[in-house]
Length: 320
Image (cartoon, rainbow, N blue to C red; front, side, top):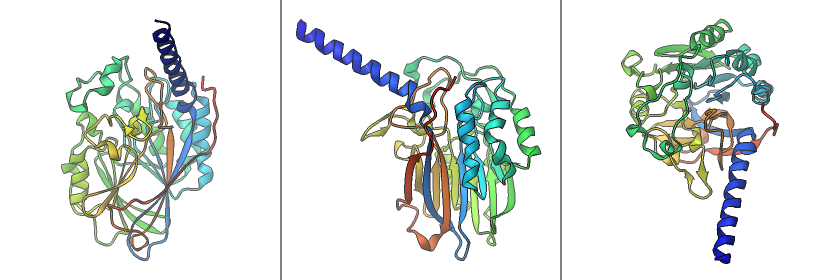
Protein backbone atom coordinates (compact mmCIF):
# COMPACT_ATOMS: atom_id res chain seq x y z
CA UNK A 1 0.00 0.00 0.00
CA UNK A 2 2.91 2.32 0.71
CA UNK A 3 4.24 1.74 -2.79
CA UNK A 4 0.81 2.30 -4.32
CA UNK A 5 0.39 5.43 -2.27
CA UNK A 6 3.70 6.81 -3.47
CA UNK A 7 2.77 6.06 -7.09
CA UNK A 8 -0.59 7.80 -6.72
CA UNK A 9 1.05 10.76 -4.99
CA UNK A 10 3.69 11.08 -7.71
CA UNK A 11 1.04 10.80 -10.44
CA UNK A 12 -1.06 13.49 -8.80
CA UNK A 13 1.94 15.77 -8.43
CA UNK A 14 2.89 15.27 -12.07
CA UNK A 15 -0.65 16.03 -13.19
CA UNK A 16 -0.81 19.16 -11.06
CA UNK A 17 2.55 20.43 -12.32
CA UNK A 18 1.57 19.75 -15.93
CA UNK A 19 -1.70 21.62 -15.49
CA UNK A 20 0.12 24.49 -13.81
CA UNK A 21 2.58 24.71 -16.70
CA UNK A 22 -0.18 24.52 -19.34
CA UNK A 23 -2.32 27.17 -17.64
CA UNK A 24 0.32 29.44 -16.15
CA UNK A 25 3.27 29.37 -18.52
CA UNK A 26 2.73 27.93 -21.99
CA UNK A 27 -0.50 29.76 -22.81
CA UNK A 28 1.46 33.02 -22.39
CA UNK A 29 4.53 31.83 -24.28
CA UNK A 30 3.97 34.06 -27.32
CA UNK A 31 5.75 32.58 -30.32
CA UNK A 32 6.44 33.71 -33.86
CA UNK A 33 6.36 30.94 -36.45
CA UNK A 34 8.20 31.63 -39.70
CA UNK A 35 7.67 29.72 -42.94
CA UNK A 36 8.69 30.13 -46.56
CA UNK A 37 5.98 29.09 -49.02
CA UNK A 38 6.60 28.77 -52.80
CA UNK A 39 3.18 29.89 -54.06
CA UNK A 40 3.80 32.93 -56.28
CA UNK A 41 3.91 33.11 -60.05
CA UNK A 42 7.36 33.22 -61.61
CA UNK A 43 9.04 36.61 -61.60
CA UNK A 44 7.15 37.85 -58.54
CA UNK A 45 8.96 39.69 -55.76
CA UNK A 46 8.85 38.09 -52.34
CA UNK A 47 5.84 38.92 -50.20
CA UNK A 48 5.76 38.99 -46.38
CA UNK A 49 2.38 37.99 -44.93
CA UNK A 50 1.58 38.15 -41.22
CA UNK A 51 -1.07 35.59 -40.26
CA UNK A 52 -2.92 36.37 -37.01
CA UNK A 53 -5.77 34.26 -35.69
CA UNK A 54 -7.83 33.24 -32.66
CA UNK A 55 -6.96 36.08 -30.29
CA UNK A 56 -9.96 35.17 -28.08
CA UNK A 57 -9.41 38.52 -26.38
CA UNK A 58 -10.76 39.50 -22.99
CA UNK A 59 -10.47 43.11 -21.78
CA UNK A 60 -7.45 42.79 -19.47
CA UNK A 61 -5.10 40.60 -21.52
CA UNK A 62 -2.55 43.39 -21.70
CA UNK A 63 0.50 41.22 -22.36
CA UNK A 64 -1.11 39.68 -25.41
CA UNK A 65 -2.15 43.10 -26.67
CA UNK A 66 1.37 44.50 -26.34
CA UNK A 67 2.97 41.49 -28.00
CA UNK A 68 0.62 41.51 -31.00
CA UNK A 69 1.05 45.26 -31.46
CA UNK A 70 4.82 44.69 -31.48
CA UNK A 71 4.49 42.46 -34.55
CA UNK A 72 4.24 45.64 -36.59
CA UNK A 73 8.03 45.81 -36.32
CA UNK A 74 8.17 42.86 -38.74
CA UNK A 75 6.93 45.25 -41.46
CA UNK A 76 4.63 42.79 -43.24
CA UNK A 77 3.35 43.61 -46.71
CA UNK A 78 -0.05 42.14 -45.84
CA UNK A 79 -1.83 41.13 -42.62
CA UNK A 80 -4.40 38.31 -42.72
CA UNK A 81 -6.73 37.85 -39.74
CA UNK A 82 -8.67 34.57 -39.76
CA UNK A 83 -11.13 35.31 -36.98
CA UNK A 84 -12.14 34.47 -33.41
CA UNK A 85 -10.87 37.82 -32.16
CA UNK A 86 -13.36 38.19 -29.30
CA UNK A 87 -14.09 36.28 -26.09
CA UNK A 88 -15.95 38.95 -24.11
CA UNK A 89 -18.63 41.58 -24.85
CA UNK A 90 -16.18 44.37 -23.90
CA UNK A 91 -13.16 43.02 -25.80
CA UNK A 92 -13.32 45.21 -28.92
CA UNK A 93 -11.05 47.95 -27.46
CA UNK A 94 -8.49 45.31 -26.47
CA UNK A 95 -8.48 43.81 -29.95
CA UNK A 96 -7.99 47.28 -31.45
CA UNK A 97 -5.10 47.99 -29.08
CA UNK A 98 -3.50 44.73 -30.17
CA UNK A 99 -4.02 45.27 -33.89
CA UNK A 100 -3.61 49.05 -33.76
CA UNK A 101 -0.29 49.57 -35.60
CA UNK A 102 -1.05 46.69 -37.98
CA UNK A 103 -4.29 48.37 -39.09
CA UNK A 104 -2.15 50.96 -40.88
CA UNK A 105 -0.86 48.20 -43.16
CA UNK A 106 -2.80 46.41 -45.91
CA UNK A 107 -5.01 43.78 -44.31
CA UNK A 108 -7.89 41.38 -44.92
CA UNK A 109 -10.09 39.45 -42.51
CA UNK A 110 -12.95 37.05 -41.96
CA UNK A 111 -14.76 36.22 -38.72
CA UNK A 112 -15.15 33.02 -36.71
CA UNK A 113 -17.75 31.67 -34.33
CA UNK A 114 -16.28 33.48 -31.32
CA UNK A 115 -16.61 36.81 -33.04
CA UNK A 116 -20.36 36.23 -33.19
CA UNK A 117 -21.01 34.41 -29.90
CA UNK A 118 -19.31 34.49 -26.51
CA UNK A 119 -17.86 31.25 -25.15
CA UNK A 120 -19.73 29.32 -22.46
CA UNK A 121 -18.63 26.75 -19.88
CA UNK A 122 -18.58 23.26 -21.39
CA UNK A 123 -17.90 19.74 -20.23
CA UNK A 124 -14.13 19.16 -20.75
CA UNK A 125 -14.92 15.72 -22.19
CA UNK A 126 -16.41 17.51 -25.24
CA UNK A 127 -12.84 18.22 -26.30
CA UNK A 128 -12.43 14.58 -27.29
CA UNK A 129 -15.75 14.30 -29.14
CA UNK A 130 -15.52 14.47 -32.96
CA UNK A 131 -16.57 17.88 -34.24
CA UNK A 132 -19.47 16.59 -36.33
CA UNK A 133 -21.11 14.94 -33.32
CA UNK A 134 -21.13 17.97 -31.06
CA UNK A 135 -24.25 19.97 -30.36
CA UNK A 136 -23.51 23.67 -30.75
CA UNK A 137 -23.49 25.62 -27.48
CA UNK A 138 -23.68 29.34 -28.18
CA UNK A 139 -23.22 32.15 -25.71
CA UNK A 140 -24.49 35.71 -25.84
CA UNK A 141 -24.02 37.71 -29.06
CA UNK A 142 -20.78 39.65 -29.31
CA UNK A 143 -20.24 43.12 -30.88
CA UNK A 144 -18.71 41.86 -34.12
CA UNK A 145 -20.30 44.68 -36.09
CA UNK A 146 -18.38 47.23 -34.02
CA UNK A 147 -15.15 45.35 -34.65
CA UNK A 148 -15.84 45.09 -38.37
CA UNK A 149 -16.61 48.82 -38.59
CA UNK A 150 -13.36 49.72 -36.82
CA UNK A 151 -11.26 47.44 -39.01
CA UNK A 152 -12.79 48.55 -42.29
CA UNK A 153 -12.57 52.23 -41.31
CA UNK A 154 -8.81 51.75 -40.96
CA UNK A 155 -8.63 50.23 -44.44
CA UNK A 156 -8.74 46.46 -43.88
CA UNK A 157 -10.90 44.51 -46.32
CA UNK A 158 -13.73 42.32 -45.07
CA UNK A 159 -13.53 39.24 -47.31
CA UNK A 160 -16.69 37.59 -46.01
CA UNK A 161 -18.23 36.13 -49.19
CA UNK A 162 -16.26 38.62 -51.28
CA UNK A 163 -13.63 38.47 -54.02
CA UNK A 164 -11.20 41.36 -54.14
CA UNK A 165 -8.20 42.32 -56.28
CA UNK A 166 -5.31 43.74 -54.25
CA UNK A 167 -1.90 45.06 -55.21
CA UNK A 168 0.38 44.28 -52.29
CA UNK A 169 4.14 44.81 -52.27
CA UNK A 170 4.20 44.88 -56.05
CA UNK A 171 2.27 41.58 -56.28
CA UNK A 172 -1.21 41.34 -57.80
CA UNK A 173 -3.36 39.26 -55.43
CA UNK A 174 -6.83 37.85 -55.99
CA UNK A 175 -8.30 37.29 -52.51
CA UNK A 176 -11.59 35.68 -51.51
CA UNK A 177 -13.06 34.66 -48.18
CA UNK A 178 -15.91 32.89 -46.46
CA UNK A 179 -18.03 33.24 -43.36
CA UNK A 180 -17.29 30.64 -40.68
CA UNK A 181 -17.67 27.06 -41.94
CA UNK A 182 -17.66 25.81 -38.33
CA UNK A 183 -21.08 27.42 -37.90
CA UNK A 184 -22.04 26.36 -41.44
CA UNK A 185 -22.33 30.02 -42.44
CA UNK A 186 -20.13 29.50 -45.51
CA UNK A 187 -21.70 30.02 -48.94
CA UNK A 188 -18.96 29.22 -51.40
CA UNK A 189 -21.30 29.70 -54.36
CA UNK A 190 -21.09 33.48 -53.75
CA UNK A 191 -17.35 33.51 -54.49
CA UNK A 192 -17.10 30.52 -56.84
CA UNK A 193 -15.10 30.86 -60.04
CA UNK A 194 -11.58 30.36 -61.31
CA UNK A 195 -8.90 32.76 -60.12
CA UNK A 196 -7.95 35.26 -62.84
CA UNK A 197 -5.00 34.16 -64.98
CA UNK A 198 -3.25 37.53 -64.77
CA UNK A 199 -2.75 37.54 -60.97
CA UNK A 200 0.41 36.45 -59.18
CA UNK A 201 -1.36 34.91 -56.17
CA UNK A 202 -4.79 33.43 -55.53
CA UNK A 203 -5.41 33.74 -51.79
CA UNK A 204 -8.32 32.07 -49.96
CA UNK A 205 -9.23 33.04 -46.39
CA UNK A 206 -11.46 31.08 -44.01
CA UNK A 207 -11.75 30.62 -40.26
CA UNK A 208 -12.30 26.87 -40.00
CA UNK A 209 -10.29 24.74 -42.48
CA UNK A 210 -13.08 22.33 -43.36
CA UNK A 211 -12.07 19.96 -46.18
CA UNK A 212 -15.19 20.78 -48.23
CA UNK A 213 -14.09 24.42 -48.28
CA UNK A 214 -10.47 23.60 -49.08
CA UNK A 215 -11.56 21.37 -51.96
CA UNK A 216 -13.58 24.26 -53.41
CA UNK A 217 -10.69 26.70 -53.22
CA UNK A 218 -8.37 24.11 -54.76
CA UNK A 219 -10.84 23.41 -57.55
CA UNK A 220 -10.92 27.10 -58.44
CA UNK A 221 -7.14 27.28 -58.73
CA UNK A 222 -6.21 29.14 -55.53
CA UNK A 223 -2.53 29.00 -54.62
CA UNK A 224 -2.79 29.45 -50.85
CA UNK A 225 -5.50 29.25 -48.19
CA UNK A 226 -5.04 30.66 -44.68
CA UNK A 227 -7.16 29.42 -41.77
CA UNK A 228 -7.26 29.22 -37.98
CA UNK A 229 -9.78 27.67 -35.56
CA UNK A 230 -7.88 24.50 -34.60
CA UNK A 231 -5.62 26.14 -31.96
CA UNK A 232 -3.08 23.65 -33.28
CA UNK A 233 -4.88 21.05 -31.19
CA UNK A 234 -4.31 23.24 -28.07
CA UNK A 235 -3.48 20.13 -26.01
CA UNK A 236 -0.87 18.10 -27.85
CA UNK A 237 1.20 15.04 -26.99
CA UNK A 238 4.96 15.29 -27.61
CA UNK A 239 5.85 12.99 -30.48
CA UNK A 240 2.18 12.57 -31.42
CA UNK A 241 0.87 16.06 -31.99
CA UNK A 242 -2.70 17.28 -31.86
CA UNK A 243 -5.25 14.98 -30.29
CA UNK A 244 -8.16 16.64 -32.13
CA UNK A 245 -8.63 19.57 -34.51
CA UNK A 246 -12.22 20.60 -33.60
CA UNK A 247 -13.16 20.28 -37.27
CA UNK A 248 -12.98 17.71 -40.07
CA UNK A 249 -9.35 18.51 -40.90
CA UNK A 250 -6.92 15.68 -40.16
CA UNK A 251 -4.58 15.98 -37.19
CA UNK A 252 -1.43 16.15 -39.32
CA UNK A 253 -2.53 19.55 -40.62
CA UNK A 254 -3.62 21.00 -37.27
CA UNK A 255 -1.05 23.80 -37.53
CA UNK A 256 1.54 25.14 -39.91
CA UNK A 257 1.92 24.72 -43.67
CA UNK A 258 0.94 21.69 -45.73
CA UNK A 259 -0.14 20.77 -49.24
CA UNK A 260 -3.74 20.36 -50.35
CA UNK A 261 -4.72 18.85 -53.68
CA UNK A 262 -2.51 19.02 -56.73
CA UNK A 263 -1.70 22.72 -56.60
CA UNK A 264 -2.67 24.49 -53.41
CA UNK A 265 -0.94 25.09 -50.11
CA UNK A 266 -2.66 25.49 -46.77
CA UNK A 267 -1.45 27.33 -43.69
CA UNK A 268 -3.29 26.83 -40.40
CA UNK A 269 -2.45 29.12 -37.49
CA UNK A 270 -2.38 27.61 -34.00
CA UNK A 271 -3.69 30.98 -32.83
CA UNK A 272 -2.92 33.22 -29.89
CA UNK A 273 -5.68 32.50 -27.39
CA UNK A 274 -7.95 30.03 -25.69
CA UNK A 275 -11.47 30.03 -24.39
CA UNK A 276 -11.64 31.69 -20.94
CA UNK A 277 -13.17 28.41 -19.76
CA UNK A 278 -10.26 26.28 -21.04
CA UNK A 279 -7.21 28.50 -20.41
CA UNK A 280 -4.55 25.87 -21.06
CA UNK A 281 -2.10 24.95 -23.80
CA UNK A 282 0.33 22.06 -23.80
CA UNK A 283 3.05 21.32 -26.39
CA UNK A 284 1.34 23.95 -28.55
CA UNK A 285 2.30 27.53 -27.63
CA UNK A 286 0.23 30.49 -28.84
CA UNK A 287 1.54 31.83 -32.11
CA UNK A 288 1.38 34.29 -34.95
CA UNK A 289 3.04 33.43 -38.27
CA UNK A 290 5.24 35.39 -40.63
CA UNK A 291 4.98 33.78 -44.05
CA UNK A 292 7.47 34.64 -46.76
CA UNK A 293 5.84 33.91 -50.11
CA UNK A 294 8.25 33.16 -52.97
CA UNK A 295 7.93 31.99 -56.60
CA UNK A 296 7.08 28.32 -57.09
CA UNK A 297 10.44 27.63 -58.69
CA UNK A 298 12.07 28.19 -55.29
CA UNK A 299 10.36 25.17 -53.73
CA UNK A 300 8.87 21.75 -54.42
CA UNK A 301 5.28 20.74 -55.05
CA UNK A 302 2.45 21.28 -52.55
CA UNK A 303 3.14 17.95 -50.86
CA UNK A 304 6.67 18.90 -49.83
CA UNK A 305 7.53 20.32 -46.43
CA UNK A 306 8.19 24.09 -46.64
CA UNK A 307 10.91 25.83 -44.70
CA UNK A 308 9.57 26.40 -41.19
CA UNK A 309 11.02 27.74 -37.98
CA UNK A 310 9.41 28.75 -34.72
CA UNK A 311 10.92 30.74 -31.90
CA UNK A 312 9.58 32.84 -29.04
CA UNK A 313 9.70 36.53 -29.85
CA UNK A 314 9.01 37.63 -26.33
CA UNK A 315 7.90 35.81 -23.17
CA UNK A 316 5.78 38.24 -21.20
CA UNK A 317 3.93 36.64 -18.33
CA UNK A 318 1.31 37.88 -15.94
CA UNK A 319 -1.78 38.35 -18.11
CA UNK A 320 -4.39 39.66 -15.71
